[in-house]
Length: 126
Image (cartoon, rainbow, N blue to C red; front, top):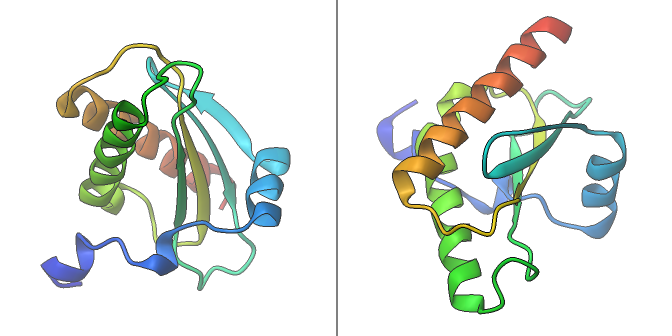
């Protein structure tokens, strides 16, 4: 892959639809880091790209500006480090679980840690 495609985040990598998200939350495996909870599920069709959905609850941040800032930081951390995952069709949900507003470096470190955990679990099962 060239550099442009490696660091892109096209629409095909965004997890959309209530049924798919509900299926992920019901049948996925949950884990967490200090500020992130994440759920992942390997999709049966291996030709599908890895798909992602991000949630920052209103419970912790009442203002949409802060919620959107965290979502942008999480999305950017994923975009830059998605090479940690094998391209094997994994659906992932990231939920911000802290009331603390963190800087990008902290979020990126936790993103790398969570993607490595997911990749290790996929390696065990697949």
